[in-house]
Length: 241
Image (cartoon, rainbow, N blue to C red; front, side):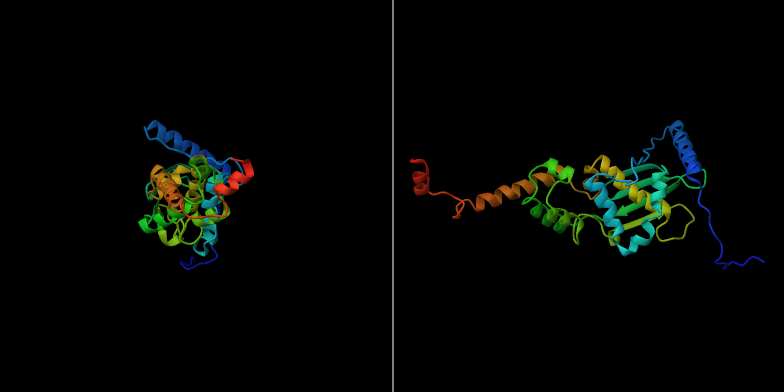
């Protein structure tokens, strides 16, 4: 006799080869219907290569709320199961192929960044970031990286993330949502600007304000004496001027 509360039930995972075939078929079907899918493809076992992509994944994995669940999405994202992923301000829309023929719909909401937090980070950035290229490549100093990923930084905390999946899995974070989370990291490898778009930040304005703050700070200190500034007498003794 079957028991509703039977805890010995085991679930088998769909083979990777079958998952890839289903994903391929779903993309082809969507294309025929005039829908534009944007699949996620990983190029290595690391999933992400750039600082932004790795920082996104590391940020998720360091939270206890996600640590025990986020990992199961790796297999799915590496298998090409994320057949569509689009990022907009405060929202991630995706479709993930599962055992069923039709991909599951995943929606992830990211709480908007407060103006106070954004301004605080901009002020700090003005002291460290020299140009847009540094920001994109993630080649700024380590303390600057901590500003982005540390407590109160630009990267979202679990409390700022909410998600929903159309699959029947009752888990707080199903493997389809987890796969999308990693898929966002892959997208940031391709285009780091998407991170700022997701967080509702105008990147051009962000850089301009950061650099303007730096210039204003330099001008404010221009008249202050410093041991690094050579006075007229020293110039005369050094160069005979």
